[in-house]
Image (tube, rainbow, N blue to C red; front, side, top):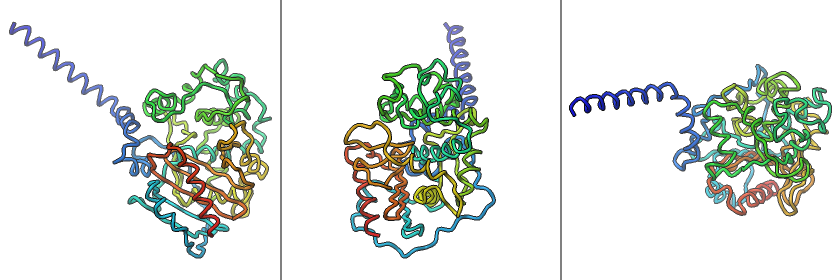
Length: 387
């Protein structure tokens, strides 16, 4: 019996040592997985969204050596009284308002600062759309009606085989993909765990096999579609997204700080939601789109791409928010009004007729509740109309 106890003790000790060794060996993956699981916890969410580079591997999108573009100081705007309660209710962390290209309001909350590089979530999709327009104009892609597998060959035989680039740009790929962030087992959360554990986003996309409808038939928001667009760009150009975005978009904008992309285990940019910028730099990007792709006297994004991207063209349901090429329009779409949006309340709102850009970052845990998005759009309109 004493001998058995001795052997049992040795076995337990060996198991403990093995677990410690595995934990040390896989420490980075375990820490990143823990970051995913706790990313939206109430006591951590604000700090997490302003410091993603401390939680996940990132890749710099160099701003270049050029000067920071000027945001001239306009007269301080008197915002509607309703803005104060709204800021608190929506857990807003940063708010920047431009009028005719001048900075007329800037405020930061929840102990965040103006130099924080804040998580974009799906606002990043609008940045990739801008890059896509440049790549098309440069002739790297023959037609938006080309099949995505022409450029992203690893997708052959999977769910995307049969979808055109236009289908994917408009979120009409027809693939089966559960986008519920609140369901641990949803596709979007499975994808997040692949990212956290150092897996391959390309392989994840290639592993999707099911469709629910013919491509181009019905709009359904599917974040992985945007990753497929990045596969198309990389296949067409032979270059990485961070380098291309730096050269074609970021450097011409004269941003204050180099953006950071969260990356997968192959150092591939998490383009569908992993871009991190200062709030003023989000506003600069919005101002460029307000000016039909022009910024600092240069045509950064082709004018015709800006137009096509920001008008309703996808087959969204009646009475729903409308969609173009990775940009949104309100339900009652007005000419020259569009926005990028990310979960938990990230926005770039553009109102071209009124000359207004609003960049907002938030940590709004109630973002999915009925009426929240409509309420935010209504507030943006109220601010724009008050200037």
